[in-house]
Amino acid sequence: MKQVGGRYRSSFLQRVNVALRLVEKDTQSLRTRLMDELEAMFKIAEQAAEAARAEGAKPKEVQNWMRIMGYLSQVMNSLSKSFDEAKALEHLKNMERMMRESKGNTEEG
Image (cartoon, rainbow, N blue to C red):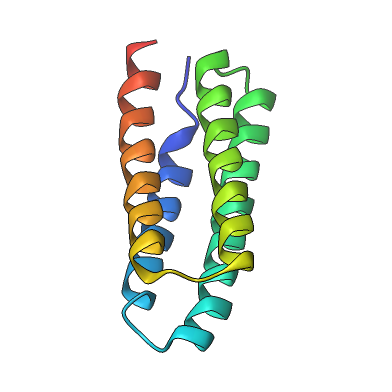
C-alpha cells in the first residue's frame, strides 16, 4: 500500500523549521506569527490524515497524524494563554521528533 505521509511530512517539517527560526525574534509579533505557523501545520496534518484515510492507508498512519493534530492543539492553547520562549522551542522540537518517529512507524507497518 502506498504511503501517503511523505509529501505532507516534508511540508510539515519545513513549517517546524520556520517556526523554530521565529522563536528567536520579537515576542509579540512572534506570538502572532507562531500561531499562524501552528495553524498552518495543523491544516497540513489534517489534510494528511484525511488523505491517508481516503487512500486506505494503515490505521497507524492516520493515528499518527491525529496525534500530531492533538499535540498542535495543545501547543496552540498553551501559546494563547502565555508565551514562554523556552517552552515554545521545546514544543517545536517535540513536534519535529514526533514527525520523524511517525515516519519510522508507518514504514514498519
